[in-house]
Length: 240
Image (tube, rainbow, N blue to C red; front, side):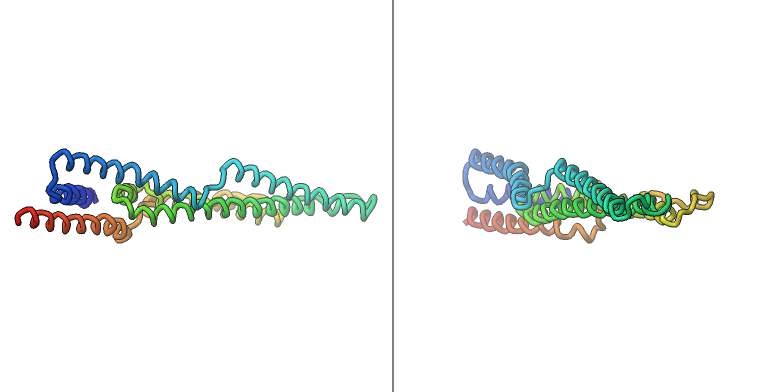
């Protein structure tokens, strides 16, 4: 990746030199190209992606999740109030086990609402990332950074895999306790040993395989070849 990126800049320098202009022109052109490719274009790519697919506010997402949980609690209270109104002095609906099941149902309803809000937030961020990745082919520097981050294991692919692992563990953890709470079963020594455990397998969370780097490498190699052709034609013209 580094070699290909270096060849891109060498081809760009050769193409500018092949124009047959003065040293000052060549230097200013290369400086301008460096600023545009490494600073302006990546910033513009992220700005365009953020403008086209604005990321939802994290604070608004948290507030919406709290509101969903509050709505679920209010729905439970309203249900209990209707029961008391319809049955008069009959008392609470059911015994302790039924009350526990009602609370669990309320928590599950709140969890489902919160999950829907979080999923919508993540989907909007995914659309923003996809657009940024498509526009990234305009900047070899952007592609090189993404490729090197993936190779190092600090790229978006590993981060998303880590979040997916956490989400799956959270679901397993909830299901482990909810199934026993709904059945009214107490935890046993075997249950403690069977509790879900979070494992982070680095070999599974590492960056995408080398075959997945083909697209960014082609995105750097193609403009490099085009610049090399322009440089070759420019040097031929200078000889003539």
